[in-house]
Length: 224
Image (cartoon, rainbow, N blue to C red):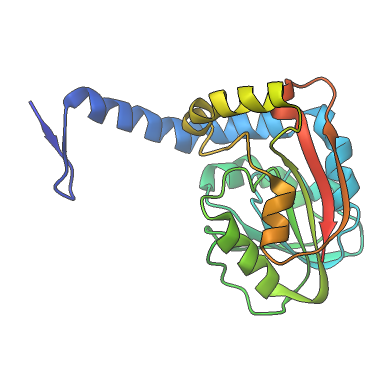
């Protein structure tokens, strides 16, 4: 037996079953796993470092389940939220309801954001650039939407500087992408931000304690 998709593609039954199972996993289970992993207490200080600098209207790419909302300072008036997962949004319903600022969901795709040019005072990304397919396109959108003088606040995991860890990141990257919604272990976050035309005003790098070294090398920064 051969299964035929609506678009005419043909595949063996076991491939079809795997596609269905992975689709359900990515839609329903993975957002809960991401909420748990990204909400780890070891990561909270890094979130606080960048989120505490937000102000005015904030464009947040990879809003997810709203883990940053409880950390936002009073200076934030509005969050423009971009995220592809409806399940993550449901997980974050209580955080959204308790937010001290307005939260507007403006799209699913960070590479094409439905926001006016120069409409955000700052932009925020926490553990998101690892999984965006077209990082350059997403960062171009961030630059477009930021007002002149606006800042891009980020904390991301990425490529480690020591060869032993980076080799393991490369080895594990395929499985990581498959199981974790396209997440990459080995992206040079600072290089990607610079290549998008930002200047790094502040950047701190290092391993977060208590986490596997392949996943623990963090880039925490402010770009203009």
